[in-house]
Length: 226
Image (cartoon, rainbow, N blue to C red):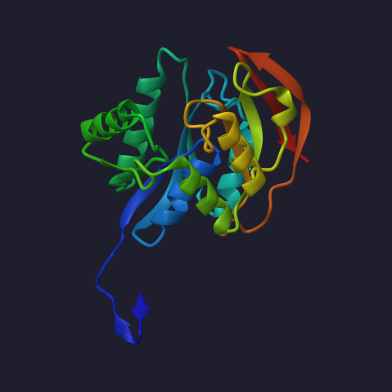
C-alpha cells in the first residue's frame, strides 16, 4: 500500500461482521472500515438455508447485500436450540481464513456483549462492538447521516402496528418512536430493518413485498428482490 509516497508496513487485521441485514450491523461495519480489513459477513439461517434465523429474511436478499458490499456471505443452518453451535461453525470457517476479529452491532444489553465475547474467545478471536453503550437516538441519526437507507421489515405487535412495515427509516420516524416510548433503534426488539443502500454498496437494492406474515407476536414483510 502506498500512502503519501511512502510504503506502509501496517497491515489491517482481518474481520467479519455478524450480519442481520439491518441498520445497526451496517453502521458497525461502516465505522470499522478504517481499522479492519473486512472480508465477509456471517449469519445463521433456518434449517433449509432459505431464510435468516434471526429476522426471517430470504437468503437471496442477504446475498444481494453481500454482493453490493463486495464481501463473501458465510452462513450456517440452525435451529434456535443449535444456534450457538452454528455460530461456532461460522467462526471456525472464518478463523481458517485468518480472520481474528468479529464485528457486532450491539448497543445493549450486557448479555449480548458477553455472549459475543465468550463465543469469540473460544476460538481465539476478538469481539468488536463499535456501537456499544451509545444512545440509540445518536446511532439512528448517524446511520442516516452517512447516507444510508433502510426500511422497517418487522414489528413486535404489542409495541407497533403493521402500518409501520415498509416505512423508510427516517428522522421523522426516529422522532415518532421517541414520542411513543419506542427505542429509536428498536434495541428492545420493537422493530427490525433491512438496509437498501449505504456508502459501501455499489448500488441500491430494490425490494418488493410478497405480503405480511405473523409469527411469535411479530408481523413481518415477506421481502423479495424486485
